[in-house]
Length: 434
Image (tube, rainbow, N blue to C red; front, side):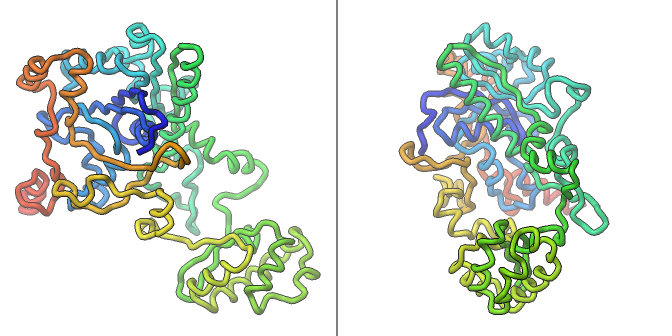
């Protein structure tokens, strides 16, 4: 476990992906992150909506890997925040934190008593972080934002890659994950300032602004004619993808043409011996793009990809395979470098899954090794309420009144459609009979 942020207390009231990813980054690096999610004694009984997202992504066996990716290493408090008492408990938990992360509108923040002005009165120096679609000012400041529209579509990232220019549908989290990671960085900047001055801060990260930052190079270059998506014929011949004999693709990335030529001569028998004279520099190679690309294409098509991996590994030619997402779980490098980690619970009766969970980017020499755990909805409700002054008797009364739930009220394999008796097995069985 990494302990860089040990002692930092975070309360997260956000759901979906963007805000919780900020909490996940902080949790991975050692902060105590308490996630407040809906209780499991009122419909739909699932806690945070993201717990069931696997069903929408074709995960029918109950593996909670998507929830674990977004919310791993956090504690869970399950509250009915629609009730007045639930809102009071939530505010008390938030006021106990160094950092609060949420995703609600300014009006709802005020209504719930978790806005910066209110919380900073209760806890001077607190940092309150919020996600946004389009920013705090401007004509679109009040528009609802979602990563597919505010991040992917508005920024130009999904401009058509097909021959007819049809935009593609972005994968889930394309904008939420980087935007949440940026929010974590902004939170840590505010926290560093607090350590020096004692002054709190209100932090906001917007999907649209994150997209403009992420796509900063094409955003700056497009007005000058730089095309996106880049047509294959517009790319430098030594900096593009080629199909191998087994119909698998490989990507070479050699923008420094002068250095590249001798290396290509080592690995490609048909590469012209007089290449340095024919194409002496970048501009000459660029002008002869079609000719050189055809030469490379024929060469790569003459052998399968494994051959080229071996060959290119002997030369100073940056390259890699063009993977599919489904290949990543089998990538030895991803596991060896700690980019994927099996949950601590893997292989247990409650968690019989072996899916690797992506870890927050960043490795540390002295701070510890990455690890990831998962919480049942409400597993830490009693523990965290007692920390802010509630007694066991009060928690028992809240439970009787269905103001909260605890981990024993959540079915671990709730989303396993194949297991008879689980909630969604019964739901899907009933639907299939109609």
